[in-house]
Image 1 (spheres, rainbow, N blue to C red):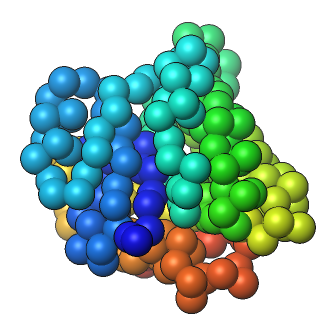
Image 2 (cartoon, rainbow, N blue to C red):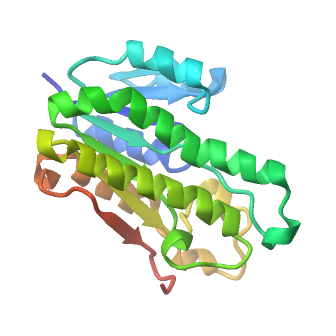
Length: 227
């Protein structure tokens, strides 16, 4: 039987690379979609089952949990977002709530929904943090705080799942060379950014049998951007 993975944010800039890589390696993908457009694109991929779900909504994630197979091997949580560019005193409270919901709250909800399955299957959980969690940057304080919560939740899940053989890891990239990010690149700076395909390969490794001994790790992927 093919291995099964749940991928949230599967139609996003990074998600498309991750989804295609898992499919190419023979996994069955269960992908969350936020819009009908995302669902249509994901549904066109062979061996990809889509579920409409806003992963920041408690009720929708609870429903998602009822539709997951009990044999799920891995969960890749890619949903996240940023509103940055201002110092703390100029950042609107609504921007903090937006980043907290999209990053921290969604991670908590997905972990709560999937940990019982992954502990039974000795599966893998991978999420995405951010470089600013480890190397503080100006004008990203609230984004960094939200992503720091993601990192802590994943590391705590690793400890809670260790006895059952489940593992959990978090990748902290700098700037990904996605289509959306390329729109604001200037003067060739994107050449130093991280290729999403490289991140996809790392995620696949952490979910594979080869990565079975790796858990509770923060994996920095900065490309050519210095720490």
